[in-house]
Length: 186
Image 1: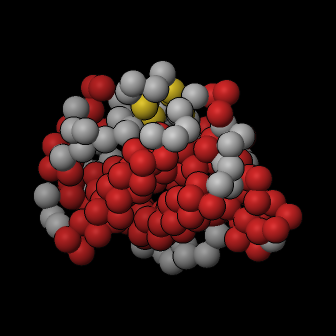
Image 2: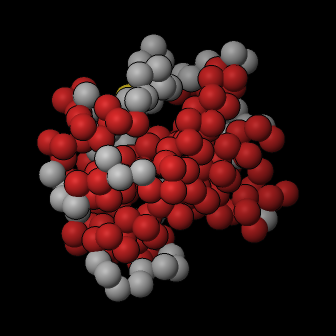
């Protein structure tokens, strides 16, 4: 596997997973706790969402050599045109009985709730701070796992063949992570 910038994006993802493990010591990852909000969850949401922006820009650059830097709307249009299965990806949280689909709103030509929350918090934190909640933080980190996995798949293999995820994910070594993709990929 080609080491893109020493796997910088993956390393950041792993630090976010470590942060989530610390959060789990205080707040159980349960749908009933989805509305719990905090400074730490705000930080996780903002970092994960910002990194999604970076990785999606890179992914779109691999899918289409045209510059797609700019907005989530542009990324959504390019990815749904070129690789629509990304919106169907499920992310599992073993031990927490959670299954997330962080990109599913793309199928309705809408951006995810966690992305809208990130932008509201970024621009009007005092008004929208309650959106810095567990639900949005988990979804944004799960989305980052999908984004990075898809980016590294196409970057390493120069194909969009999801059957090759096994090789890419083995190289990334995410055995003890908070989140997992489809078991068939491992």
